[in-house]
Image 1 (cartoon, rainbow, N blue to C red):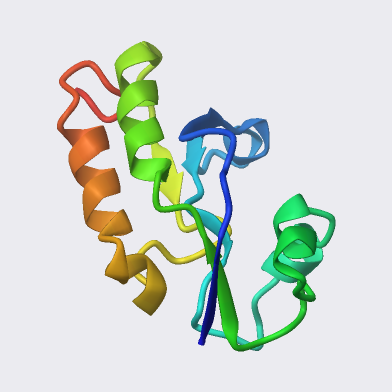
Image 2: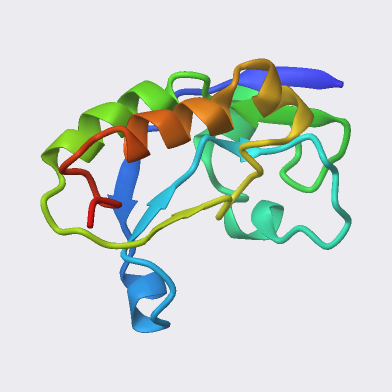
Length: 125
């Protein structure tokens, strides 16, 4: 499995599309491609123009690689402190935070600790 690292620009983002569908107010993405290689995954089609694929020299529709940003949980911690509108945070919108490569960096656990651990963050009652 080839692993590439990218820098995502945000931690927690507001998502109007999810809000319209009453799914969530916020989203978190820890990369642009997980290493599950699901044949039904739409991420490649949705993100085909994302710079991370070009930087990695990979096709968005290819298999056998992952593109992750291990620093996203730190940005989530920062964003959770500044977001005052409470609401649902959707994870796994582009990739699985508990995929094998993401687990190597404890991304899912770190995301949950950094978001849920913030008393005034988006998940707070």
